[in-house]
Image (cartoon, rainbow, N blue to C red; front, side, top):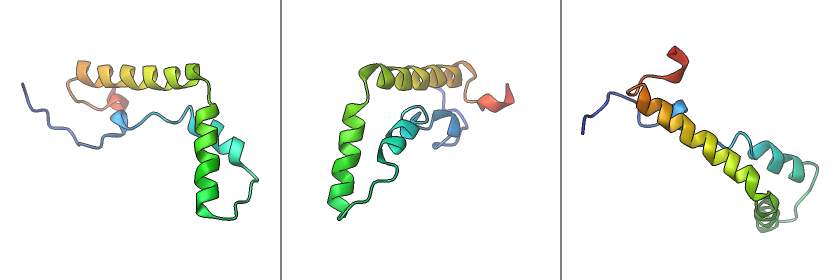
Length: 80
């Protein structure tokens, strides 16, 4: 295995929650919580309410980006 000179926390490989996070945020927008525990519970419920196809899209996009990084041998995607 060849070690590639690449940052371990590349933005190209970061979690791809940009599709799901805005939807979760919109569900929580405007709500007020009496405690941190109540906020966490509301967040959990919002996450669990997202349909499976939304999560599938999120992970498919992430896997595609990982494959592009492999194909580019560690070069940043923005350079292409």
